[in-house]
Amino acid sequence: MGLGRSATSRRRGSHDSASSRSSVFYQQFPQQIEDANPDGEIWIVTDNLSSHNSLSTRTWLEDHPRIHHAFIPVGACWLNRQEGRWRIFRKAALAGRSFAHRDDIEYATTLATSQLNSRGSPRVWGRPGAANPSATAAICVRRF
Image (cartoon, helix red, strand yellow):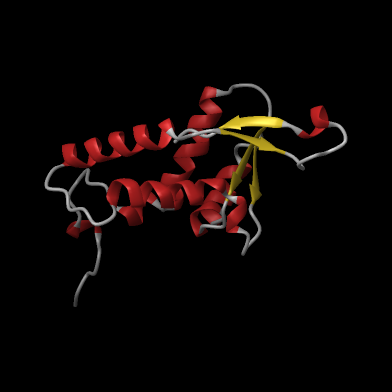
């Protein structure tokens, strides 16, 4: 009987994309945010990945009443601006490359991030030509 991808088949301490998408791994993220921000409510806007809305995560959130989730609607991934940036980053840093060593990945990541940031420009939110420009313009600088 095969064990599939059991804990015995993984090297101890290695990064595994499946484990990085687990509920327990995800719960470390809001915990770090809560630890860094001891006062006030915390709102996390996230997509509908199963680990973000699992029973384990919902139970964890009950013990952390200051943290609230707001989910991007299903089928509206265009609202998650990080998805587009991730696509551009993957193409610039990772596409078509093989890496022999971890340092090679770090170098490609640093170089691509630097190049993408050099082309970054402010994003003005709001309706173009609105009657009251001060009411519609909020500037957000794109940085990877």
